[in-house]
Amino acid sequence: MSEGTESTPKAENPFTRPWFLVSGGVIVVILVLALVYALLPPVGAAPNGQPTPTVTTDSAQPSATSGDSICGLPQGDQTIPGPGLTSKWELNGKTAVPTAPADFGPGKTDSGARTCYAHNPTGALFAAANFVGTSSRADGQKIMIERLSAPSETRDKYLATPPPFSAPREGTNVQIAGFRIQAYSDHTAAVVVAIKNSQGGLGSQTLPLKWVQGDWKVDLSSFSPLSPIDDMADFVPWSGV
Image (cartoon, rainbow, N blue to C red; front, side, top):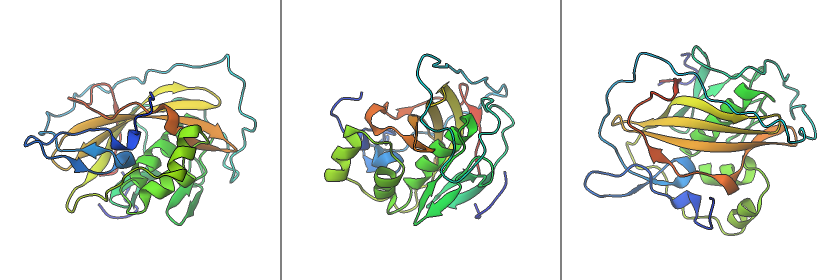
């Protein structure tokens, strides 16, 4: 993969939830939100049919304070992205992430923090994918908590006492494999990202987002656990590798 290639919450700490389990029982602390994961056995190929995203819309809630992005990105197309979404990809840490600075974001990159996304469903998807990619950086946890997360009591707790973190293990490689837009409204979104490791194991993570002060931010207070999945039947295939 070369750079620029086309192609709840209870009080339990979400940064320490188990994901992939090694067949020998060895637990490896790595990636998405510094969660514990291990390697699943390879799974079969994804089915030929591509899914249609399941979307719910919350029209009863008030709209965001401002619909304008912090770096002036247009709101653009409000269509839920689906099969056929094409993107330019580049490496963030070890993970390929989508980039469209003039359309969907990130419109700003500062010291590893990739921010400013369009106020539309594809902008929310790009924000979620780039959040996942940030976790493969050595400084990823700090960036995710301080720069990419929405204000909440959970975020305040992690700012005061950062959860345990271990850098990715040498030789591991986890990449985005697909997505599903689970919910979208003017001020909130829920994006489910499918993730594949270098052994072919699959997992999924639901990322809740809020439109906060002109940008999509991940809500740390309402994470669901990372879960292993058997196949990509419920996801739109989408990757940079």
